[in-house]
Length: 299
Image (cartoon, rainbow, N blue to C red; front, side, top):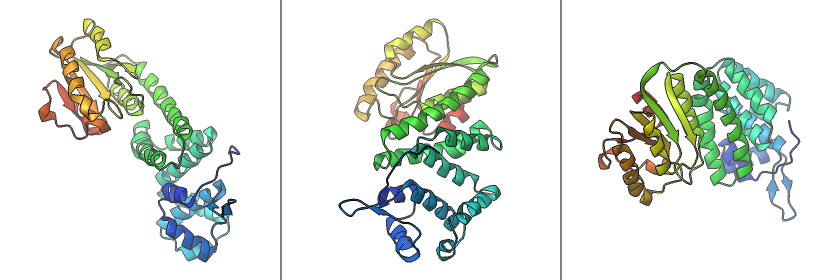
C-alpha cells in the first residue's frame, strides 16, 4: 500500500464506516480499540491504520460479533476473521471497504486487486451494479461532507472508467446484431459526470446495438449532423449538474427542434436534474428515466 499520510476526524470515521461518532468514542474509551493522536489545539485525529481497523471491526460487529469480544482480539486476528466472513458471504462489504482504502491512499494496486478478485466470481454487469454503484453513491456523500477531496474522487472515478472502457471495447469488437435503431450518447454542455453514461453505452453495446459515444459537454446544435447518417436515433443523455431545473424547459424545446427533423428519433434522459420532471409535461419523443435499469429494460 502506498505510504500516503492521511489524518481523519471522528466525523470522517463516522462517514466512512457508518458507525456513529458517539459509538466510536465509546468503543475507544471503554475498549481501547483506537489510539487517536492530538493536534496542537487538542483535537483528536485518527490515522489510516485506525480507519482500517474500524472498517474491519465494523464488519465483525455487523456480522454478529459482540464489541466486547472484538476488543479482546489482537490486531492480527481481526483481519483474519474478516477474511473468513468474506469467504463465506460478505464479499461485497469487504470490496467496498477495500475500494475506500484504495481511494483514500491513492492505491491503484489495491483497487486492481479488489476488482480482479470480484471478476473471478461475477460478471462486469454484476460488479458495476452490486459494488460500483453503491460505492459511487457513497463517494458522493463523502465528497459532500468533505471527508474526501476532489483528487480522491477523480482518482477512483478514472479507475472505474478504465474498466468500463475495457469491457466496452470487448463487446464493440463484434458486429451489432440489433439494427432497428442506433444509440447516440452524449452529455449536455457544462456536464462532465460520465460514468453512468459510459456504463449505459457498455450495456447497450452488450445487447447488440450500435452505439456512438460523443462524451462530455455537447451542444445541441452539434447533434444535428448525426441525422444525416442515421434514422431512428435514440439520443441518450445524463443530467447530473447541468442543465439545472429552470433551464430544462428551454433545453427540451431546443432538442425537440432537432427531433422534428427526424420523426423516428427520440431523446432518453436520466440523472439528478430530471428527478422532479414528469413525462406528461414533455413531448412524446422525449422520455425521462428514473434509473439506468429502467432504461435498459425499456430497450
